[in-house]
Image (cartoon, rainbow, N blue to C red; front, side, top):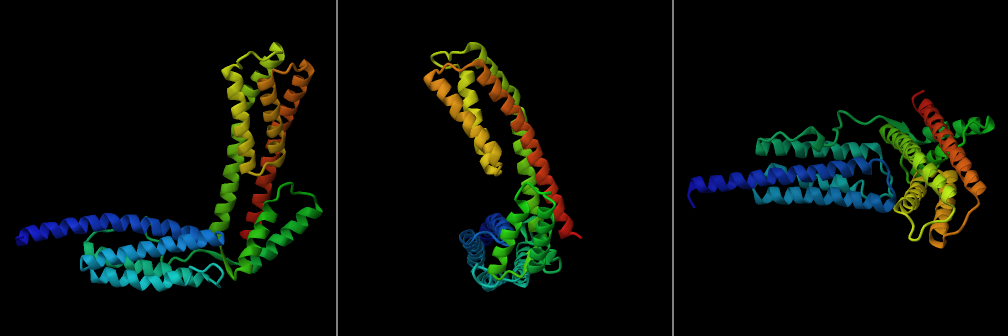
Amino acid sequence: MSVETEDAFQKDLVELFVQEAQEWLQQIHVALDELQQSPPFDRHRALAQTIKVGIANLGGSAATLNLSDVERASFSALPFVEAVQDPSARISADDFIALCKQLGHVHGALTRATGVTFDAEHVPASAEDPPTMIATKEFLVLLRGLHDHRTASNAFHRNLVQTMIAQTEGLIDRGVEQYNVASIQEFLDRSAEGDQGFLQVVRQELPNLTAILQILKNGRVVPNPPSSDLQNAVERVAQLWSAAQQVNASHAMVFFMGLHSFLTIVMQRRVVVDAKNYDAIQSRLGQNVKGIEEWAESGRTERMAIQGVLFH
């Protein structure tokens, strides 16, 4: 093989390595972000293993191309991963910062060895830009104080504060001394998105459900076979029931479960139902939509209160 051919072959290998390195860094970045949010034990171990495998693959591939700086930086990061891989151990914010700093060294070595500037999004934040933290015990005291005050005034109708208290107590039991403020805000944002998404779906389905109940009321007897509109309505109610479960909207879950059972029986057994019963169901449907709106507003109130004690 000529020198020119060898150089071209080596260049192709480096280009392939760059693509693989970007993919591994992306996987490492995503896993590390989730790992810092104190996931359940099994998930924690899986995420740490993902990071470990990605770094080992990076170092191994670098070794085959004689990219010694990348190889050394990669394998030097493995002890930092091992420091955070056991969820039952006492893991501090400094442990994660040290891992991020070492990954920054890997990034630098890659850039120097390949001449390619890797996107910043593929590399976790360095120690020079640490995340904002709050002492876990301090946050627990704030949450308990908020819970006691709001319970006395009967201001909360959701369990978001209690959920955060349970999560924070779990972190303390695991020896986590600092809580990432961004993780708390992410939990609150996900809660808000879930509430609004569920409310929007219910509002969208309200005209359809009202119409199908009116059709059943007017027709009295379900045709055989049932119309596609009725079958679709039963499926949509089942989806609303599932959606209510996902956001823990217990009252809505009970209502849609009951409505699903009712429509299923009417459709399958072609039961004749008195018109006044359909009127009652339509009334309850409207009441439940109003209840879901109040439920969503209560969630917003609790999230604002949590943010209030967090950023006081």
